[in-house]
Picture 1: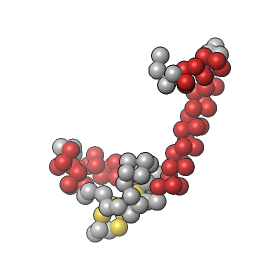
Picture 2: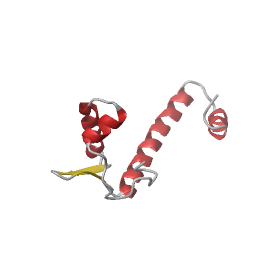
Picture 3: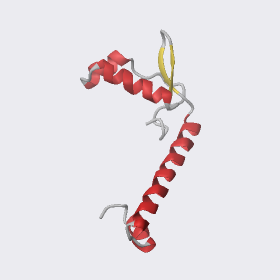
Length: 98
């Protein structure tokens, strides 16, 4: 939701406790997820106020770069396994499903 813009920059996220109750998930799981999102630059925290969405463009560009890196690695592996460029392109055009 951050990457698509559904959550606006500086939008406050639900508290760990609120989200844990809403989703019926252990609060420690939510806390770990928030910590990971903060580590990756998607959110920031202010002590006593909560967690907020960072500006999405830098994070989105970083994620796009990561996806292309993974895609390049997958294409190289497919080629090494004998798949042709045409087969790979056809799969992409069909929507990646077989």
